[in-house]
Amino acid sequence: MEDYLAKSLDEWKEDISEVLDQINTDYEEVKKELKVYSYKYGITKQVIQSTVNEEIIENIREMYHKPFEEKYSELKEYMRDLDEKRKVFQMFVNKIDEVKRKESPKTDLAAAYK
Image (cartoon, rainbow, N blue to C red; front, side):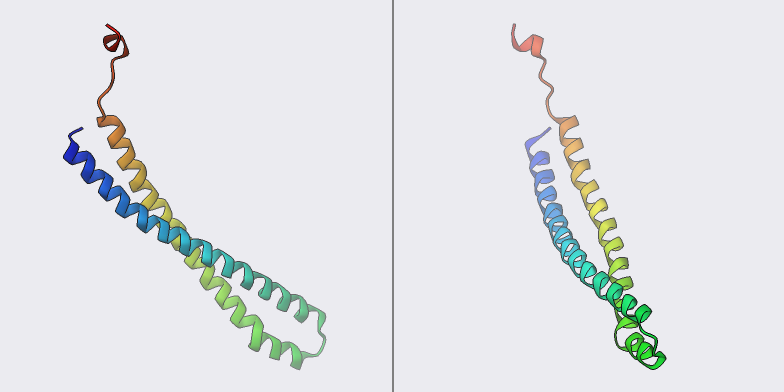
């Protein structure tokens, strides 16, 4: 592969890798936040199930349960989006590596030892 082409692909891969790193960072942050809301949602659900007073149950649902459920669903959807982006940008990196590997000069071991 010509040097200019290899250099261009390396630069492009570096740019894509930076985007991929940011996506991975965002993914990990959202994953942590999702875990927090999973616990909050689960706890409020258990409290509601253990409470008999309908007025208190409705207050808990309005104040905590519904907002936690909505945030949990929103974060879950965002995680799916980030996961898709991770896959796509990782594909770029893999394809660039594949092209470079295919185009790199193949060493003929038998000829090299003659």
